[in-house]
Amino acid sequence: MTAAVAAILIALGLAPAAGTSGLAAATQADPASSPTLTLRSPAADSLLVGVSTLEATLSSTVGLVRLEFFVDGVLVCAVTKPPLSCTWDAGSAVRSRTVRAVATFETGPRVTQMVRTSSLEHRVESVDVRSVLVPAVVTDGNGRFVQGLGRGDFQLFANERPVAISHFEAEDAPLSVVLTVDLSNSMRRVLPDVRDAIRRFVSALKASDRVTMLGFNERMYVLAEGPRDAVLQGPGLDRLAAGGTTALYDAIVYAVGHGAGGSGRHAVVVVSDGADMASQAEFDAVERLVQSSDATIYAIAVGAGAKDRRARTIMERLADRSGGRAFHGGGVTELTEALAAVRDDLAHQYLLGFTPDANGGPRRLRVAAGGGRYRVRIRAVHEPAGAIGAAPSVR
Image 1 (tube, rainbow, N blue to C red):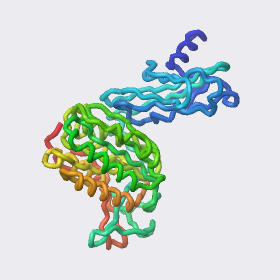
Image 2 (cartoon, rainbow, N blue to C red):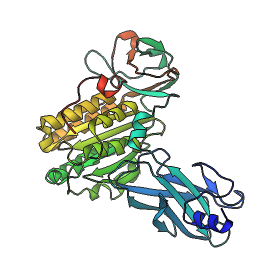
Image 3 (cartoon, helix red, strand yellow):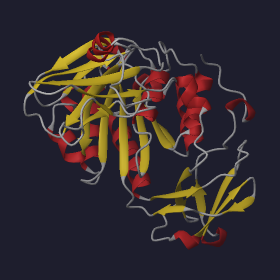
Image 4 (cartoon, rainbow, N blue to C red):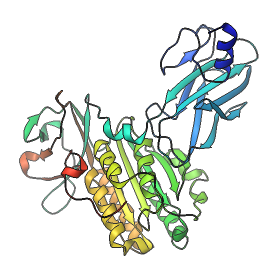
């Protein structure tokens, strides 16, 4: 490759700079003399679908002329000053993409960074054998939460064999919540009540908790993201507007992937009034994804969905597979009570971790607490979805 051709490819975001390889950050000059570029969103191996935020940061913006975002070699947006972010519609297909940020300055060479996102098939089949996280909720014989337990109060079993607990966090562990709200046309009547109930739910979270507000119909929209107070003070909640049809499975795939890879606990709260109508993802694949992730799913059926047996079955199954809970109720009172129950659950959730053996394979996990005196709720069997039981009759 000639120097001229290489320069053109770099300018288009199609090739890394000299001296770099793979998908790691690439700078085309001495790092000591060039600003550092970090591609914050999307993260490597995350799922990119629907209307998504592309975001980068620079250690210095002095002399910045232009920051461009390329997806699969195509320029999709550009900015000239902070905030260094823009939105781009990735469509409904969940597939791997190459995202590159290229910053150009008045003097000096460009700096770049590139990441590759994941496909649904890759995410479902990939299992991180280095660590498995197990969120656990402990209650007594009367259904009351048990607080103040330590690592020594828990025993963890895989296929009924005891395994060492390598990671433990109490109820105050960092929490990331992805609020996933159905914005399809059938939600129009209940949406004002949904907005008010969600505002109360977010207000009850800790100031340090991270919240993502995801709206969906046949597309996905990140409406707000950040610490609790930033989401409450921003316009995200006011941007909830109904229209279109329901791609429930695609939304769950995106929500599960959105918080993956972070530290602490990861919860997905889904509010919807109906069964899936427009997803690219199939139910079985979504179920396997939920089981293989560390996200806890809380599914709330509202409006017509609360009376739809098929919709309720779907949401109950996905919640159960993740160690979460499912709720249903037609009105704002039931929705508010369900969100309050979710908040209580998350406030009393422990996080256990262990390192699986090298041979992998299906695992049946069981957690005991307090010498077996307490009831412990964790995610369901860690096996392929087909081995657990027949899936409901859905797509």
